[in-house]
Image (cartoon, rainbow, N blue to C red; front, side, top):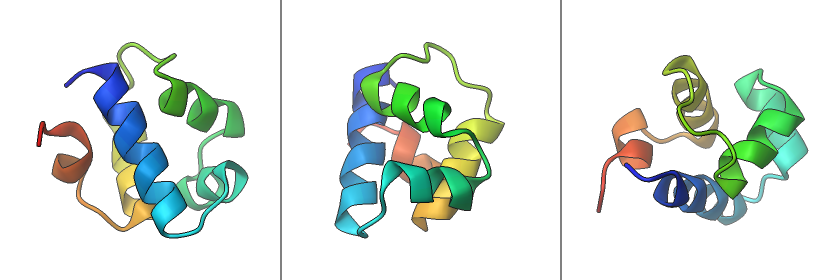
Length: 69
């Protein structure tokens, strides 16, 4: 999975359900800066717990975020 694809999927889903980056960070219990870095592709290899927390907060499966379409 490319960082760009993960970044795009997170941002697209976040915007679709009407969350701000700050709200997503709170829901996922991760830092606001981490959300920004995820959405811009700034994190090369996130720990598996990070996409897992984000997926849960976005109400999608981890597979939906990390697998190619």
